[in-house]
Image 1: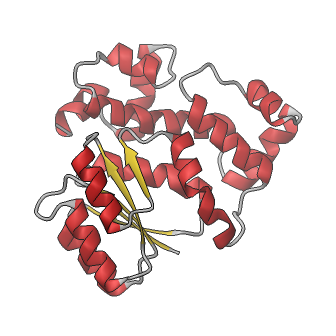
Image 2 (image 1 turned 180 degrees about the horizontal axis):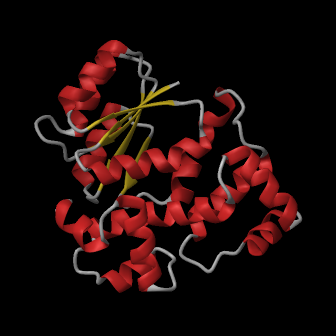
Length: 232
């Protein structure tokens, strides 16, 4: 299944990809930052599902949706926007969008919206237990989430969960959780410029600003402050 993600904010594209991929690892995710890139992609591959930001440079997401539907009449369109606007909602209905999401995208909302596609796709490479574990991580990353807590929520032994997690996901539970928190922190650094580094650290699930800064620099080769300045 070919899925098109269109947003002029790189962090939003990265976040959508990071949320969708574990749930649907067999989907081909194509990313574009504007309508021209999106149309170019749609001319090369058949697009089945598109996530379109309304506020794009040049053509709006709704205008892009109309053009995509001309090329792919059966396409499903999901509008993603930071704006709660009745006019946009009315246009979306006329366009025949299947759903309308507001930013920031919430993992549980995304799961609900995409649940209708699960039976259409090949079976996920993740077992039911690991799929549930990943969903919990994505929802509770800001909490003090230990392997034992996660194992209790999915009703299996922690040692067994640790082994299954590493075998199926390819990294340990702690490594995956840390990297997911780093991805979240990147989004917060840019989307909340008024937040201090300490607040970003806490909101992302790190209990120590010093540890957060150390891990962030190891992961990105930049300090959180440098990353925020660069992404302005």
